[in-house]
Length: 119
Image (cartoon, rainbow, N blue to C red; front, side, top):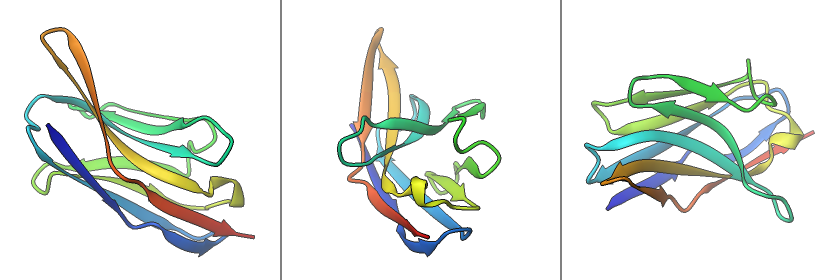
Protein backbone atom coordinates (compact mmCIF):
# COMPACT_ATOMS: atom_id res chain seq x y z
CA UNK A 1 0.00 0.00 0.00
CA UNK A 2 1.00 3.58 -0.65
CA UNK A 3 -0.40 6.58 1.17
CA UNK A 4 -0.40 10.00 -0.44
CA UNK A 5 -1.07 13.35 1.20
CA UNK A 6 -1.33 16.52 -0.85
CA UNK A 7 -0.98 20.07 0.38
CA UNK A 8 -0.33 23.54 -0.93
CA UNK A 9 -3.53 24.39 -2.73
CA UNK A 10 -5.36 27.64 -2.26
CA UNK A 11 -6.67 30.80 -3.86
CA UNK A 12 -4.33 32.85 -6.02
CA UNK A 13 -4.71 35.63 -8.55
CA UNK A 14 -4.02 35.06 -12.21
CA UNK A 15 -0.32 35.32 -12.90
CA UNK A 16 0.57 34.08 -9.44
CA UNK A 17 2.32 30.94 -8.29
CA UNK A 18 1.64 27.98 -6.03
CA UNK A 19 3.63 24.92 -5.08
CA UNK A 20 1.79 21.69 -4.42
CA UNK A 21 3.34 18.95 -2.32
CA UNK A 22 2.59 15.24 -2.25
CA UNK A 23 4.11 13.29 0.61
CA UNK A 24 4.16 9.55 0.01
CA UNK A 25 4.61 6.73 2.49
CA UNK A 26 4.10 3.00 2.89
CA UNK A 27 5.54 0.48 0.45
CA UNK A 28 7.28 2.97 -1.79
CA UNK A 29 10.46 1.24 -2.94
CA UNK A 30 8.84 -0.07 -6.12
CA UNK A 31 6.92 3.01 -7.26
CA UNK A 32 7.52 3.41 -11.00
CA UNK A 33 6.15 6.88 -11.50
CA UNK A 34 4.29 9.67 -9.79
CA UNK A 35 2.00 12.21 -11.31
CA UNK A 36 -0.33 15.11 -10.74
CA UNK A 37 -3.82 15.06 -12.21
CA UNK A 38 -6.55 17.65 -12.08
CA UNK A 39 -10.29 17.59 -12.44
CA UNK A 40 -13.09 20.13 -12.62
CA UNK A 41 -16.80 19.34 -12.23
CA UNK A 42 -18.25 17.83 -15.37
CA UNK A 43 -14.89 17.14 -16.95
CA UNK A 44 -12.66 14.12 -17.11
CA UNK A 45 -9.60 13.98 -14.95
CA UNK A 46 -6.54 15.00 -16.94
CA UNK A 47 -2.87 14.33 -16.49
CA UNK A 48 -0.97 17.51 -15.64
CA UNK A 49 2.57 16.24 -15.12
CA UNK A 50 4.39 13.01 -14.39
CA UNK A 51 7.84 11.95 -13.27
CA UNK A 52 9.41 8.50 -13.43
CA UNK A 53 11.79 6.92 -10.98
CA UNK A 54 14.62 7.83 -13.33
CA UNK A 55 13.60 11.46 -13.34
CA UNK A 56 12.01 11.68 -16.78
CA UNK A 57 9.11 14.09 -16.92
CA UNK A 58 6.20 14.85 -19.18
CA UNK A 59 3.59 17.57 -19.13
CA UNK A 60 0.22 18.40 -20.56
CA UNK A 61 0.55 20.86 -23.43
CA UNK A 62 -1.55 23.37 -21.51
CA UNK A 63 1.00 23.65 -18.69
CA UNK A 64 4.33 23.27 -20.51
CA UNK A 65 6.67 26.09 -19.66
CA UNK A 66 4.61 27.10 -16.62
CA UNK A 67 4.55 24.02 -14.36
CA UNK A 68 7.45 21.93 -13.11
CA UNK A 69 7.25 18.54 -11.43
CA UNK A 70 10.15 17.37 -9.30
CA UNK A 71 10.80 15.05 -6.41
CA UNK A 72 12.84 15.05 -3.23
CA UNK A 73 13.62 11.41 -2.47
CA UNK A 74 15.06 12.27 0.93
CA UNK A 75 11.71 13.71 1.95
CA UNK A 76 9.55 11.21 0.01
CA UNK A 77 7.78 14.13 -1.56
CA UNK A 78 6.82 15.12 -5.09
CA UNK A 79 6.18 18.76 -5.89
CA UNK A 80 4.34 20.64 -8.58
CA UNK A 81 5.58 24.20 -8.99
CA UNK A 82 2.91 26.19 -10.80
CA UNK A 83 3.78 29.60 -12.21
CA UNK A 84 1.88 32.07 -14.37
CA UNK A 85 -1.38 30.56 -13.20
CA UNK A 86 -4.51 31.09 -15.26
CA UNK A 87 -8.18 30.88 -14.28
CA UNK A 88 -8.45 27.74 -16.40
CA UNK A 89 -5.97 26.05 -14.07
CA UNK A 90 -8.65 26.06 -11.39
CA UNK A 91 -9.29 22.44 -10.39
CA UNK A 92 -8.91 19.79 -7.75
CA UNK A 93 -5.34 18.56 -8.05
CA UNK A 94 -4.62 14.98 -7.04
CA UNK A 95 -1.39 13.09 -6.63
CA UNK A 96 -0.99 9.62 -8.12
CA UNK A 97 1.55 6.86 -7.60
CA UNK A 98 1.89 3.92 -9.97
CA UNK A 99 3.66 0.63 -9.54
CA UNK A 100 3.70 -2.74 -11.27
CA UNK A 101 3.82 -5.85 -9.12
CA UNK A 102 4.12 -9.23 -10.83
CA UNK A 103 2.93 -7.65 -14.03
CA UNK A 104 -0.16 -6.11 -12.43
CA UNK A 105 -0.43 -2.29 -12.33
CA UNK A 106 -1.52 -0.59 -9.13
CA UNK A 107 -2.55 3.03 -8.79
CA UNK A 108 -2.83 5.04 -5.61
CA UNK A 109 -4.50 8.40 -5.11
CA UNK A 110 -4.47 11.15 -2.56
CA UNK A 111 -7.52 13.14 -1.45
CA UNK A 112 -6.63 16.12 -3.59
CA UNK A 113 -6.02 19.79 -2.96
CA UNK A 114 -8.11 22.59 -4.45
CA UNK A 115 -6.49 25.26 -6.57
CA UNK A 116 -8.54 28.31 -7.45
CA UNK A 117 -7.19 31.02 -9.73
CA UNK A 118 -9.10 34.28 -9.82
CA UNK A 119 -9.07 36.59 -12.81
